[in-house]
Image 1 (tube, rainbow, N blue to C red):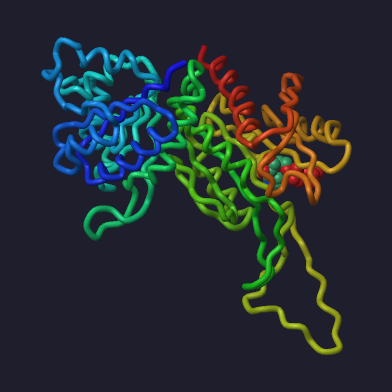
Image 2 (cartoon, rainbow, N blue to C red):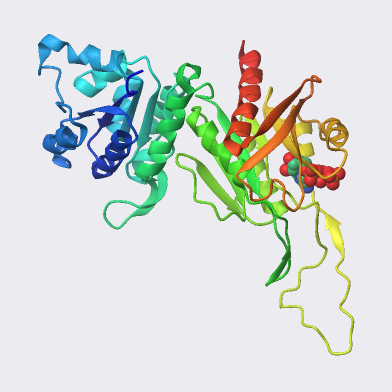
Length: 404
Ligand code: CTP
C-alpha cells in the first residue's frame, strides 16, 4: 500500500503559518501531502514554502497544468482533505458548494473524509452565518473542529484560535485510521463529563477521588474524530484541552450537574464518565478549620449530592437522547453493574473493576458495556481510546436506529 494521500488546504488567515508545522508533521509521519492554498493565503505563506516542504506543486488555480485536470484529480485521489486554517469565507464557500479556485473545486470532488480547522476572530466565529455554515458542513459529514480559546491577532483574546498543529494532526490521524467507517457522529452533539469532583470542607481541603479524567478525555478525542460537536465538562483534571472540543471546567458535583444539564439540552448523547462524589460536607467553613489543643476534631457531617446520571436518564432533555453511565466497582462487578443499570435508567452502562492499582490514572482499561436491551459487550484490556471507540460504536448504532 502506498502512502496515505492528504490534501492540505490553506485559506487566507494569519494562522496559515501554523499549517507549515502541520505539513511537516504529516510528511514526517509518512503521508503524501499536496498543499492547495487559496490565493489570499499566499499573502501569509508563499507558494515556494509549500512546494519545498511538501515536495509537490502548490498552485492555487485550476488553470495550471490543465492537461492533468487537477481540479478533479486532486480531490478524487485523496484519502483525507484537511483545511487549516479554514476562514469564515472558506467555510461559507464549502457550505454553499462554490468552486472558484483549486481548493474549493477539490472540496467538491473529494469523497474522502474532510476536516476543517477554523480560525478567525470570535465575532466572525459566533456570527449566525458562520454557525449555520458549520452546522451544514457537519450535517453533511465533515469534521469541523472547534477553534481554541486564547490570544487572537492584535490585542484580542477569545475563541477563534487555530488549535496547535500537533492536535490537528492527531485529529487527522484518527480520522484516517477510521478509513471507510468515516465520521459516523458528524452532525451530532455529545456531552461528556470527565475527571473527579471535589467537595470542599474549607478553603484548603476537599473530599475527592482518584479519577484522572483520562477515559473521559479519550471519549472526547474519539468523538471529535468521528465528527461530533463535543462539550467536555471537566472536573479537576490536569490534562490539556483536546483539540476541537468545547471544555467547561468545574469543581464540585453541583457545578458539574449545572454544566451537564446546561449543555444537554440539544445533545444527542450524554456520557457520564466523571467520578461524581455521592456526598458533600454539610457545612463549608469559610476559614481554614484549625486544630485545637486537647480537643478531638469535630466530626464531618455529609449530605447527599444529586444523582446526575439518574436525573438525566429520567428526564431526557430531548427525545431519543442516549445516556451512558460508568460503574466503578470493586466486588461482584457484573452483578452490581446490572443492578446499577436498572437503577440509573440509562441506555448503556460501562462497568469496570477499580482498585488502587487498577484503572485510575492508567492509560489502559478493560470493561463490559451493558445495554438496557440486555446485551453485554466485553471490551478487552487495551488503550482507553479503544474502549471509547467501542462505546461510540454502540451510541452511533442507537442514534442511527433512532433516525432510521
Ligand atoms: N453519578 C452521577 N451522580 C452522582 C454519582 C454518580 O451522575 N451523584 C454517575 C457517574 O458519573 C457514573 C455513574 O453515576 O456514570 C455510576 O457511579 P458510581 O459511583 O459507580 O455509582 P453510585 O451511584 O455511586 O453507586 P454505588 O454508590 O452504589 O456504587
